[in-house]
Image 1 (cartoon, rainbow over the protein chains, first blue to last red):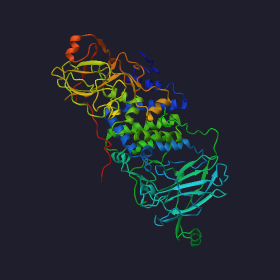
Image 2: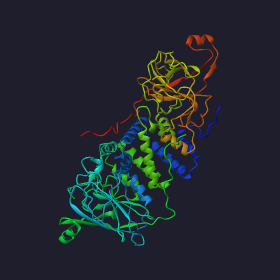
Image 3: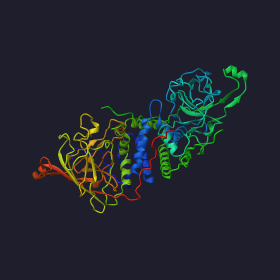
Length: 313
Length: 313
């Protein structure tokens, strides 16, 4: 032999396959990465053994993953969609954002937060077409877990139109930035904007994730919601949804995003003076969504920057 | 509500996340698919909880999977490569091909079996360039587990050249089909062909899988081998490797493909008469690889054809 192996993981044996593979990661310099990969290998091998996955089934799995990757581009993220329909996104968000009974609960970001929301002034409408659905006023206030306001908090919102489409799904047809808005809360942490009542809609089903849902008899619908992402210096960024209390699919949301605390009535409101003041037709609907965020703590973990592409040598 | 949910998986709760998601698959008409997905969801959620995966770490995971998908094309299969370096391919092959102590052990197919091997006559060389490495004679015989020959068995072989490259990795530079061959065994199940001694080589490291190996301090080398895929009517197709006994990395193969029973000496041979008869320079190397395959049995499972792309409605 002219070269020495870098490590000796030992010959492969089915009975101890996970141990053999985990041993190959024993020299990983980053302890966290080693722990993640060891657990991933152990659970993946346990899954394969538990179901007795055949080579042909795994070949189909590879084809499914490849097709999923090929459906990802600048405006479509099929892997996030896959993570969503398997409940993994919801689980990660929940673990990553413990509420301690105080914070607003987090939910999945979803696959459509792909473009920057246009900056808009408080009170503006995010419905640029004026024909996206039933007029609605959204108000709220961002506070921290001590009840103190978060002045100038950035409130990024995005939602689908009455046909269930985001702007990025209909380029050239829906104006870019329609039903998206980046608002800056006032000195009291308050925000307000005009929009339309969101409607339930199906996630995209023309890709491999849609095929998975059909093969398993699952519907593709998401309960009606508006996405929110709240950020501010020194505050842990919160990604969540506001759900409409009268929406169907609250009990069977396709991406497991619904949490009871995030369901709010979009109240029919007959108030001509307020409608005029806020630039809405009367009657309109009104929903108030108070948001509680958590100040960043030293223990908050972030990304370690694994897998940042290959090293160019 | 104007529409009824198709099923009620219940609100998402972290503590019973896997149960909630598994319940969404309860109506899947195919029992096997339901079992696979239930186990997949259970192990995936257990993994996420065990390591406390953060949202940023999962976002990096999504980026990694997406990049892996984007590296897959007609001549590169990065997902198979990922499956290989995590030992999943080797595990699936091993489970799918129990030897019962009789059959030749199976190994991973690897990512380079992407093009049809050119049909060649017994005794032909697969080295079209005549400069790929040290001349070598490979002989063998395909029999079943009762010792009976498998006449006319198809013996598909492929290997890298002395620089560690398969033809598909160097289009225009290496002739298509170089170091590949599809042979038809004779009436006694015997096969023979000329080639060059295989050399260890690194798997492709210019993609996300290479980044993973670097991040974890793993080398990328495969022990020297020739791929074999044996097929015949009524016989279970066998995908395996022939490993060179004097190769480095037999104990730390990057894709966990090495099994002790597949290691054979490539014996230096000084036999001018045989060299002349077989069209080889003298001295040459010779390896004999007897292969035992299993007759198909009624219980052999195949693919069910899940996920065959979206239904066009």
